[in-house]
Length: 453
Image (cartoon, rainbow, N blue to C red; front, side, top):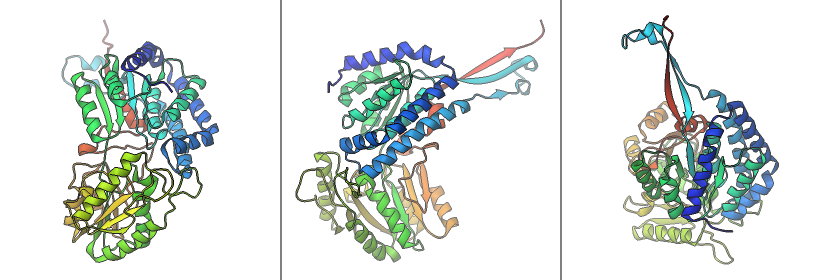
């Protein structure tokens, strides 16, 4: 596979720019038809794509199939949202100035913003990329995709289906290669107008800084330290099951994973016992095995990070209830699902995103302390609250600084059609089909003076 250079990235933008006017002028119903064609092709090719995802990034095959299913839905939803990309009308005569408003009609339209750069991560190489591509195309924008280097073939297969579905040449462009050089060339090219990025907060800040120097819009979906709060009246059976899904789904390599379990003192011992037992029973194995629940980490550096975080926690007198080490024997980057208890706030695992199957239990005395702990990091992506007392849950949810709060569900839920994003250092803007399309269009006011001559 050939890797692109900065010059290749600039050429990809030039290709997109050459198609910008033509694609923007394509009727919405035609864009919607082509998006449905693309969805149909992905659906028909679903098993092959799922196995490709599992092979490239180690996602368990059962989860990879769900990712393909969701991506198919994203393109179908985008096709429907074309009909909702509307402006507003205003009663001109409600305004005294400027004079003559009784003879004017005022309304807005939404114009495509221009070339969109989509930079996507490894953990959802099809669906998170589709969350950038689908709304851009639906809104009339050509795209230049810079996929993760860990899963280039998934992105290329998507591009092949896009071309075969009838999307014109130049509208969907892919450039492969290292993020630094290519990303800078894409962000700084004079014809790119919006950069949508999912990845680390550090890289996202750099993109925002460069984009800001050129007055370009950004949508950033960044890191998180998503807390899952367990109040003393939470039903422990369903709560533990949700915490297992939230903490260990796709080996914890999810921005919305439940990365801190905040548990009321009175139930913490029982919760910790049940959670560690459930985590120890998860099947760790190769991604393509049907029974695998926890697959490998993305690379050796991720394993080293797990070792370092666990060692740091132990150095702060934390306890390992289960896991805490690499899986011995055989190839692959496997780490045992790990539950830590008695973790002090000074431990790195309480503030640094692990992006792996390691989760700390932190204990609180009352609601005020739980809220303070939930809000104590620089992140604010998602959170969860488990309790049988819904009015109490609502009060807590309103005070948690996050882009989404789920009551009696894990942190890693996402509805593809609904707004998704974070606050603080977890991001800027919102994804979700309609909301991303709004970000990817410019509002234009048009006035009509129909005064008689």
